[in-house]
Each structure stands twice: as structure tokens, then as C-alpha cells.
Amino acid sequence: MASRKDNLKHRYGITENQFDQMAEEQNYCCKICNKTPTKRGLFVDHCHKTKSVRGLLCYHCNLALGHMKDEPTRLEEAAAYLRNAAA
Image (cartoon, rainbow, N blue to C red):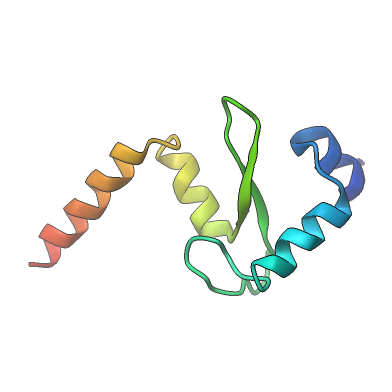
């Protein structure tokens, strides 16, 4: 089984120290919802096309971006749908 160190370096090109520094800069909170994850911790969010790291997210925000295929328009349409459905 790959270690956390190996996984971070292989999948995202960052070190454990870089991950820890990012977490500290984000006050150990999700970059989207600004909540502190409870059980699963923070996940590295990255662009699937460029492989660049964007920040650290909680499980639910990371999953949401993935399901929306990282498409801003799709996310905006989902937000508009929710706003209109609540009216």
C-alpha cells in the first residue's frame, strides 16, 4: 500500500509539507464551504486537465466538483436550479 507521502507526490506533485502548509493557510477548512472536515479530512483538489493543485476541499465539496465534471457552467446552473426550486 502506498504511503500518504508517495500518494501526494505521485498523484498531485506535492510533498507532505506542502499539503500541511496549504491546510494551515486554509485554517484546516475546506476552500469552498469553509468548514472543518470531521471524519475524512481534507482532499487535494486539482485540475484534471493541467494537473495543477487548486486547494484542499472537504469530501462533499470535492465530490460535488467531480460529479459536475469541474464545469463552472454546470455548477452555476445547479445553483440557479436550487435558488428557483426554493422560491
